[in-house]
Amino acid sequence: MFVEILVAILLGVLSGCITGLIPGIHVNLISLLVVSIFTTLSKVFSPLEVSIFLISLGITHSFLDVIPSVYLGAPDEATALLVMPAHKLLLKGQGKLAVMLATAGGLFSLIFLVILLPLISKFIVLISNLIQGKVWVILILVLLFLIFKNRSIKAKLWAILLLVLSGSLGLILLNSNSFKNPLHPMLSGLFGVSTILYSLSASSYFPDQDSRKCFFKVSKVGVIGASIGGFLTGLLPGISSSIAALFGKVIFPKIKEIEYITLIGGSNTANFFVGLITFFYLNKTRNGVLVGVSSILGKIDLKIGIILLLVSLISAGFASILVIKISNFCSRLLPKINMNTISIFVIFLVVLTVIIFSNWLGFIVLIISTLIGLLPHYTGMSKSLCMGCIIIPVIFFLI
Image 1 (cartoon, rainbow, N blue to C red):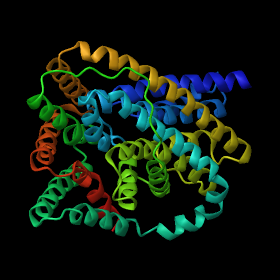
Image 2 (image 1 turned 90 degrees about the vertical axis):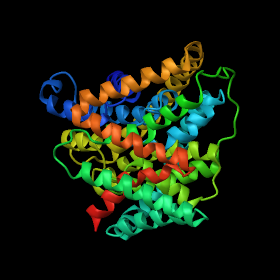
Image 3 (image 1 turned 60 degrees about the vertical axis):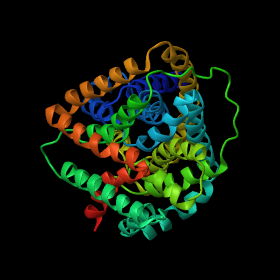
Image 4 (image 1 turned 180 degrees about the vertical axis):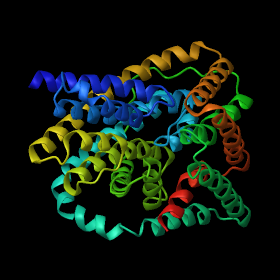
């Protein structure tokens, strides 16, 4: 039994590496595929082993997707807010530090939530009922925070404009049946390609990366903020971990940029793990991976819940090691290549994945979202405002 579980974990870690490193391939796609062929898989693997594979896949993906966000500027919905602060460190030769901060956020947020699990178990039903039906109010408060944290009237007007533009784009795309996988081109343009293009106009070289061991103090504020934000969004369906990071920033508005990287990295993993806790206690699924687990296992009992908890911790350990190894490789390789070459290659890669996964309409979306995403760079506004593309559609859906 132990050997079978270990094999399922390792296969999940390997698959999570693939989905995390390649922009456009999402864990939900793999989960759907696994569920669709489960009848065939059940001849070789038990339902528990397949579920362990899916949990390991989801946890690993939440760690590995930091790599393309930091080194390539190609985010998914979970790491969109990471691109800007991480790219600043990358251009200072500290890309490895950005990866380590985000990874530490994920690992320590997971451990923190596990330690608090006895307390969480007592209040999860109460808190779930308390915030149910009031999420749109919380999200409106987040938008108001993003607007009024700016001091000048001009900055407030720019903030409103960016929220309107990104929110309108999100409303059109997420309420249309014409667009396949709209999040990938929209977020890649708003946060990825726009950042790369701006850097391309300002720099033609990839700075040498500090290859020494990174020594840093894990941000308590980042870990706590990620855990709280991940807890709130993990209880709610359809709310991404980028919004969890925004919740964390609202709770700690004076958080430093380096601490914010820890918060964003932790929000991703915390959001997924709280989704697992919610599934166990409330029998409600909050993401595609857990929908797959629910389809295969049904309601999980205490014994299976403990197994999946241990699987999450083991997978997080494997994933953290892999992130560090891959980051070391990227830090050594990329400075040997001309920055313009890397930037053009990444843009080509994003365009290619957008066309493959979202067809030519997705390419048009990529262009429009890139133009909107360039505005914060030239106006000095926060890139967080572009999260209106998700927050505003969610508000309209919930009201």
